[in-house]
Image 1: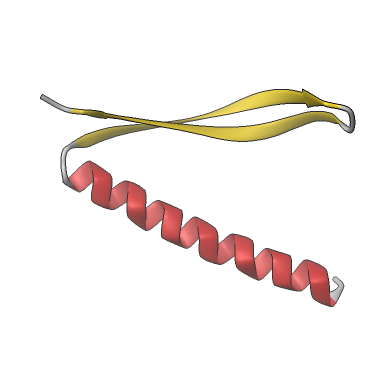
Image 2: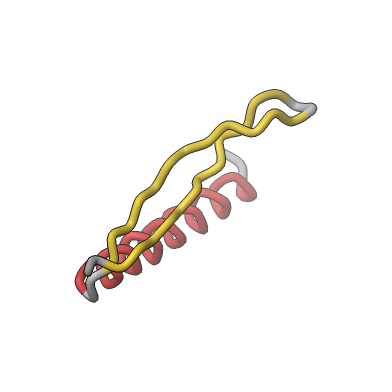
Length: 58
């Protein structure tokens, strides 16, 4: 793994840690959080993109 790849992997790990904690906090505060992976057609080929939605539980 190159230094750039290692740094990208570390950044991704930290971003996912923050994202997961944020989702837990939102759920604790009464939000229903949904995550879907949608596929966008790009010139490089299909690219998976996360789509997050949140709604209040009443």
